[in-house]
Structure formats: C-alpha cells, structure tokens
Amino acid sequence: MVIERFVTGPIEVNTYLVYDENTKEGFIVDPGAYCPELTEKVKKEKVNIEYIILTHGHGDHIGGVEQHLMDFTDAKLVAYKDEAEMLAEPGLNLSTEVCGRPVSLSADICVNDKDTLRVGNIELTFIHTPGHSKGGMCIYTDGHLFSGDTLFRMSIGRSDFYGGDYTTLINSIKDRIYVFSDDTKIYPGHMGMTTVGDEKRGNPFV
Image (cartoon, rainbow, N blue to C red):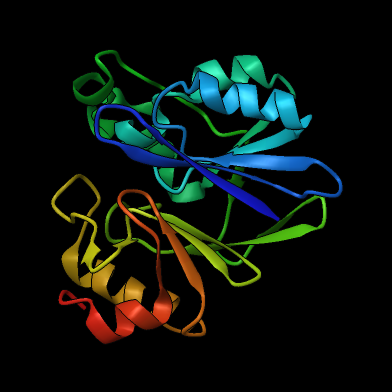
C-alpha cells in the first residue's frame, strides 16, 4: 500500500492519496482544495481512483471534491451517513468562509459504523468517531488509521462547531481509537503523523 500526503487549501489540510501498488486501485481522503500535483501523480502512476472518502464535512476538507471528481469521473464520494446534512448545507459546513464559495455535496455512498470497503487488496473499515462533527469518522486499514480532525499529534479537533461535543470527542478517541495497537500509525487531517502509542502516552487533552 502506498500513502502519499498533499497539503491543500488555506487551512493546510492533509489530503491523502492511497493505492494498492499491485492492482493500482486507489482512493483519496479529504481533498481540501483542488491539487493538480495529486492528479498528476495519479496519472503518472496509472492509478484508478475508485473513491473520494471524507472523514467529515467541514469546508476545509471538501473544497477540492468537485474538481477532483471531474478528473476522476468514475470515482464515488463516500461519507458517514450522519454527515449528509453538513455536506449539503454551506451554512453548516462553513465552505463559504473557508473556500470563498459555497460547497454543497451529496455522497454516493453513505456508510455506517464498521462498514467495510475493498479497494484492490486494501480493505477499509469505517469507524464512527463523533465529537468534532456528528458524522465524523476514521478510516482503518492494516495498521494505518486516517483520523480526520478527531485526533491530531498531541492535540484534538475542535468541538465548538455545529454538531460538535467535547465529551463525545474524548470518548471517541478513548473508546474507538485508543483500542488499536500502540504501533498503529495515525494520519491526521492536519499537522504531522503520529501513533496510537505516542498519543496514549503524551496527548495532554485525553
């Protein structure tokens, strides 16, 4: 499995390109803004993008969805079922403030907690982690966890936006992320990579 990070948008979101090196099937996580370098990489490596997957619906994580769907016309948009309202409403997803324009999206595939999806030989499991938003989720596959804005390196996501709740967020981290092995690699929505073990030992918020 290949994982490449591209920093996109005005709030520097980590957008991830992930693909199976053997089958060349892949997906994108959280395109915060249109990223030509990502599209160029996909074309260079001859990757077939099957899905664009959103960890949650805030404007800084969805600003590049529409343009990348034009690049990858067969790709399906995936989000957690409880995020449908935020994705559809620019007033809730804050896209006008962040992207300079309203963004309204509807997922092609709305997933539930513990649903799975296969991309080439990669099996993804979706884990509902509310608290930053109602339908926030993490994506787990074989020792790798894409945590969106639920958990950062030595920090956590905000809980003061629509649908957020601090106690719910902390419980999501403790009960849904910290249950993975300490060597699980965490790829957050902002800032640098970390591991479950490092966060359990040192995150001052949890």
